[in-house]
Image (cartoon, rainbow over all chains, first blue to last red; front, top):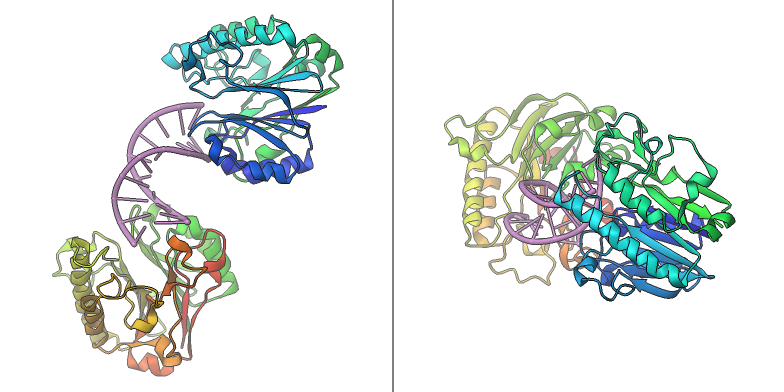
Amino acid sequence: MKIATWNVNSIRTRLEQVINWLSESPVDVLCLQETKVVDKDFPLISFENVGYHPYIYGQKAYNGVALISRQPLENVSMGFCAILPELEPQWDEQKRVITGVIDGVRIVNTYVPNGSAVGSEKYEYKLGWLTVLRKYLQVLLLSDPAISMCGDFNIALEDIDIHDKVKIEDHIMASERERQALRDILSLGFADAFRKFNNEGGNYSWWDYRTAAFRRNLGWRIDHHYVTPVLCARAQSCIIDVAPRKLEQPSDHTPVVVEF
Amino acid sequence: MKIATWNVNSIRTRLEQVINWLSESPVDVLCLQETKVVDKDFPLISFENVGYHPYIYGQKAYNGVALISRQPLENVSMGFCAILPELEPQWDEQKRVITGVIDGVRIVNTYVPNGSAVGSEKYEYKLGWLTVLRKYLQVLLLSDPAISMCGDFNIALEDIDIHDKVKIEDHIMASERERQALRDILSLGFADAFRKFNNEGGNYSWWDYRTAAFRRNLGWRIDHHYVTPVLCARAQSCIIDVAPRKLEQPSDHTPVVVEF
DNA sequence: GTTCCTCTGG
DNA sequence: CCAGAGGAAC
C-alpha cells in the first residue's frame, strides 16, 4: 500500500499537475492539503475519471483537505468534532483534518496551521490546535492500532530538516514550543517513516516561493508520514518526489510517499 | 509591407501567444492595444529576441499601446501632446496613441475609449477624445500624405459590422454620435482598407468574453485599418486572422492585417 | 468571462 | 513569489 501527502496550494490551480502525477505515480491514497475550495466546487469528476474516490473537506480560500483513494474508504470522518463531540465547534471552522480507513489502516490527513510568527496570535492558535490533534489521535488509537498520519505539519522537528542558511532560533516552523507540541503527539506512539530509511539532512519537501528558494535548495522538511509501530515495522520506503516542484507553476510543496 | 493591429488585453498575459503569432505570421509592424503595463515592466526583450524593435507607451492596469517593428521606426512619438503642443496635457493621461514612420508610411496606432454606455460620462469622453484624434491627424497629414491608422476603435461603423442579435439603437460602439465622430475623422481622407476587399457582413474582430459570444459568432468588427488614398491604392489585402481567438486564454480581440 | 487592482495569507 | 477575495472595467 502506497500513501502520498501533498500540499497542492489550490487544487483548482494544480489540478492538471495532480492528475498527471497520479497517473505516473499511482498510489492507493493521495492526501491533499490546501485545496482552497468549497466542497461544491471541488473537481471530483477529474479524480473519478482516473479511477479514484475523492473524500473532501474544504472551505473558501484557505485550508481544505482531501483523501483521494483508489478503493472506497471506510469510516471516513471530517474535522475534529466528529471524533471529539465535546470539543468546541469553532475548532472545525478551519478545515484541516480528514480521516478514513483502508485495509485496516486508518489514514489521518492533516494540515497544521502555519503559525505566522513566533509569539503571534496565530502561533498560539497553532499550539492549541496541536493539543486538539493530540486528543483526536488518542481517541482514534483506542480503536485503530494501525494509524498512518500524514500531511503538512508546518514543523521541522530537527535542525537537519532545514537548510542551514536560516536562523533557526525562534523561527516559525522550528521553534521549541512547536517542536515540543509535535513531540508530545508523536509520544502517543508515532514514528517518522522517512527517518526509518534516511538519517541525512538536505531532504526537503517545501521551498518558499520567495527568494528563488527552490533553485538554491533552501528548503524545509515539513511534510511528514507519522506511523504507529505496527505500520513502522511494515514500512518499505518513504520517498520525497521532487519532480513536481520543478514544473511550471508548481505548488511550493512536493509529494512524499510512504509504502507499506 | 504588412501591418497588423491587435488588442491583446494585457501583453504580459498574452506574451506567449503574441510571440508565437509573430513567428507564424511575420508582419513589418504589429500595433498592440491594451498592453496594460507600465513601460518599465513591458517585456521588451521577448520581442527583441525574435528580431523586432518595440516602441511602447503604457500605463498601469489600463490602456497602453505599442508599435512592434521589424525595422527601426523613424519619427516615433507618443501621445497627442507631442503633435498638438497646445492641447491640455490631461488628454495624454490615458495612453492611447503612438505613431512612427517606416518606408515613408506613417503608422498611427490607437486605442479609442470604449465609452461604457451611451449618455455616460465615459461616452462624452469618447466623443471628445475622437475630436482630439481628428485634430492630431490633421497635423500629421500636413507632412505625411501616406498614413496607415489602425487600432481598436470601439466603433462598428455599419450595421453589417455587428452580429444581428444585438439591439443596435443607441448601443455603445454603434450609436449615431460615435459613428458620426468617426466619419468626421475619415472625411479627412481615410478609407477602410477591409472594405476595399470585402463588402460582406459577418466579419468580426471582437467577441465579448461573456455569453460564449465567440462560439456563437456574436461578434463586432471594431478593429480597423484606415488608410489615406495613396495607401488605399497600394493595398493588396486586408485579412482578419480568427485563429488566435480560438486559443486557450485568448484576447477578446483577434489580429487584423493589411498588406501594401 | 477575463484581467487588473489592493489586500490578506503563506 | 504565489493564491484567492472582492471590486472595477470592458
